[in-house]
Length: 74
Figure 1 (cartoon, rainbow, N blue to C red):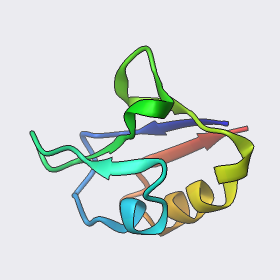
Figure 2: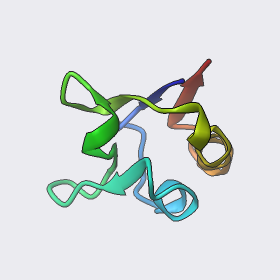
Figure 3: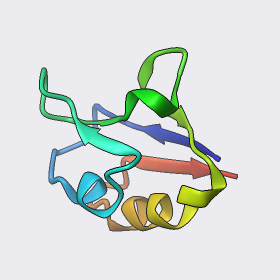
Figure 4: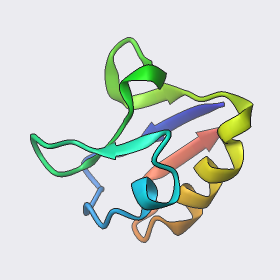
């Protein structure tokens, strides 16, 4: 599944990396959420390809984001 973070909309609440730390983490440079390096597409911290085994936690993180900054595509 493809996951995209609108980092401009991210308010760094930490919900995504609390719900799904295997996929999301805080970017120390600007305190916004990013995709962990292992799942990034082309090195882009805002776009990732995530294995189906992590689908449940990715959806939980997206559903929990208060500003709806995470988009999930099957």
